[in-house]
Length: 116
Image 1 (cartoon, rainbow, N blue to C red):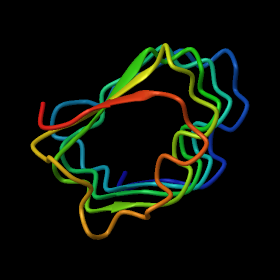
Image 2: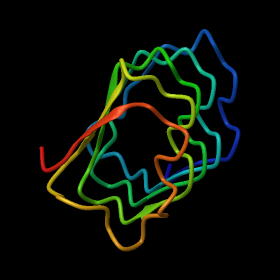
Image 3: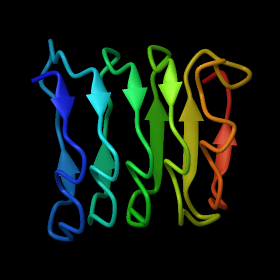
């Protein structure tokens, strides 16, 4: 599987964990794919290159997420509705990649740790 489609798990509150097997070929996470889910844990593989709008919006049970260095496209409002108790960790970057929307974190109160 190389893509998780838009709205794939939208609102699935009983979805608490996603585990990608070693050797995962996942490249794209679609719009609102995990929006409003009950996710408490997700570990994105380093094959992911694109995350679309609101992919993790209102996934307020996630305490943190690590964005791999491979992500070169990040659409707007990916973390819409996140609170200050949540954090976003960006691997190997000190600023947003040029392919990231200027609105990638818009409407989110989460903290961001760069270059982890």
